[in-house]
Image (cartoon, rainbow, N blue to C red; front, top):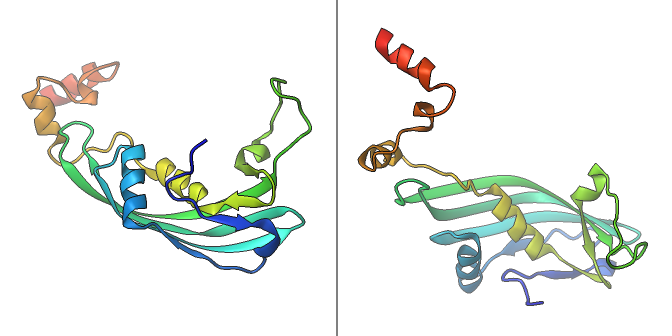
Amino acid sequence: MSTPEFSRPFDVRQVEGKAPHLEAGEAERAALAKRFGLVRIDRLAADLELHRKDRIVEARGTLTADFIQSCAVSAEDLPVSIVEDLYFRFVPQSTAYADGEEVEIDAGDCDEIEYAGTHFDLGEAVAQSLALAIDPFLTGPDADAARAAAGIGTPEDQGPFAALKQLKDKQA
């Protein structure tokens, strides 16, 4: 397994009360932009507070990012800024099941990130949060013109509501 582009390992035994500021460098931002299909990432930072109980670490804070993303229709470059609240819960890797064994999980398990040994990667968790915040269908102001030029209707021109739109257009 390769090292993540934005790796910031922390020792679970030494995190209580720490408030790290994580900021991706130029090479890290370029690698993450490639991974997430962005034109570029101009800023990626997170401010967090860490608290530990036994071997469980909770991290709360804020992610801020500025990046350039291509419009899903016209491919024009669009600037995007995000500010997201973060919450991570790092737990020791479970050994209660064997490889290949079917495991049932509940909703609480989905919010947990397992780590092996004594270290967890806070940077990779922040990077994955950025990935979740990216709008995969982002469209810019020129999207409708690009659709029309390509002979593609808008989503409202297709499907079950197309007839209603046509009636509305006739009344106008």
